Length: 554
Image (cartoon, rainbow, N blue to C red):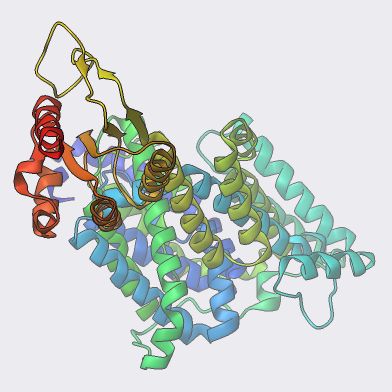
């Protein structure tokens, strides 16, 4: 914000003003729909869009990012409210804000980029399907006694059992809303289709009800009492037991918020040719998620759709985001009572389109051309998100992705055994010679090509055991010229190998150890097992030393 204001002028302000007004109008129906779908009242969605929209633009690290409630949070917000109530949601959101602040302060914004793409696609598509599922009742005006179950499978079972209660008027409103939103880009590039659908359907249903028709169509006013007053600040009471129970959902909110906001900022960078500050953006997200629940709001993050709307309508600086928040505030204070006439089936239609756009089904389909391990992570994350919940999906997906990454690293690290000669001119640490270096009889050279970490340690030990069974070497040279690092498991394994070799009267020589690995060996007192002179700079010295050992044994 302050960087942009240094060179701010009237032309830029007019561009930001127009973009801010349009984005504010676009954000209105989405904020209401996301609020209701999350299990809170409509005004809480708008309050979140106002407060988060202002704070994320004011403190953020992107010029054009627009923040507010998003569809990604619907599932987890609804689950937290069902289990812990509104107070639990407030505490979890504040905790998530603190986690986001810490990520930003410790400059960990870049780490979020390392979350595997199949996980992002998997839980995004899973959330989209879950959002679609939650809207079936309102879209078709179903009458379901006892409420709709929380889990996915039971929910569809109840829908099929009660589909005979379908209301034709509500279904018509919902279907026409979807059609209007889908076709609106063809005749309106500025006014969003969701707003057009809400205005047309609200006005149509209102006129029909005046004439005694469509009386069965439920509106926001039938389900909620609209309060157009700004809420007072209220800090929820916290105790250790509640905080402990909410750590997992709070981390999920923080991770999801970080992923979505940085993904949105990265997409915006590609469009405007700029580069956002990921750590500053996380700090802004943290501030927004700490402040929003104090005023009755819900979790918020950067919103890709609203950010792109901002860019496409001329937004240049964070001022556009601030103006969008002001526009929403004015609508909230003066026009909010009119929201009670909006049909619930129309909002369901809006969310059906949101879930479709969010699903990324084309990307999901293309992921099946990737390696089987990526497809496995994609499907497991997707089904866990749909059948269980987002928290479990992210936790299991990350663990599985990490395990698969370790396996791939282990597969790229190769261990080879050389017993005859070495070509010194083939990318080696040896002193260049015309002729190949011969390996004396009774000497084995083991070459490790890649990181020596816990994924490869056992593999190396097995190869050594196999060569021990087939041959009887007197000296083992472990060539480590292509080992960039060694972890604690690798160190422990190497120490065991040295100890085992000594018991078998086999001497160990290390060759080509780089400074990083050598420092780790020294810190772990590796010189107590193997003398310093047995850690050689290159293979020439190691082979010469092995010849001296062989001479001593004669």
